Image 1 (cartoon, one colour):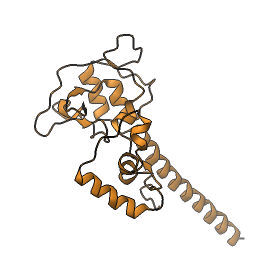
Image 2 (image 1 turned 180 degrees about the vertical axis):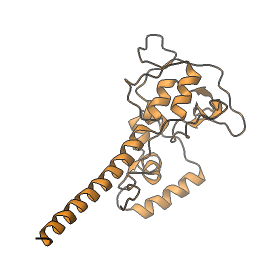
Image 3 (image 1 turned 90 degrees about the horizontal axis):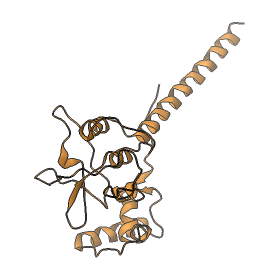
Image 4 (image 1 turned 90 degrees about the vertical axis):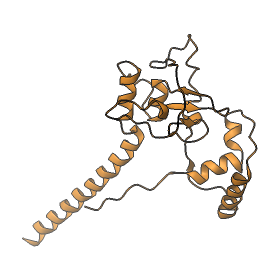
Length: 199
């Protein structure tokens, strides 16, 4: 059987284009584009030259803001989203700085000693941080909003940190299924040929 990893559908270059060349990212979120520093402007120029006359063809990587933008503030007590409760006490420390809101999330993890809290945080533009809610973490792992996680915050976060992102599992699973199905088709054709030759 021949199997290969599925082709990528999203790219960093597309996200960079939408933020620093077209500005579409900021417009979509109703934000004023920030000023890029020299490093950002240099990278933008390289991407512009590489992809001119049009933008990259792949979808942009999904940022934390993209994944969570339609969720209510977890401090809003009128919110009816399951597993979307605020947890206080978040703080940064070396090596545990959270996920910038306008970048893709860092990997959500859970280990033998529990959930590394510093990894499971949103980091805002002003460098303030707060913990992801369970629902936000589930969104980042592409679980549907009606999927309920049981247990306290730490237990639910452990489940999510040990989970494979749902959409990734779907893509990989489908590619393996397709490879096996083509093998079955191939074997069926060989059996038919053998039967015809044996007559």
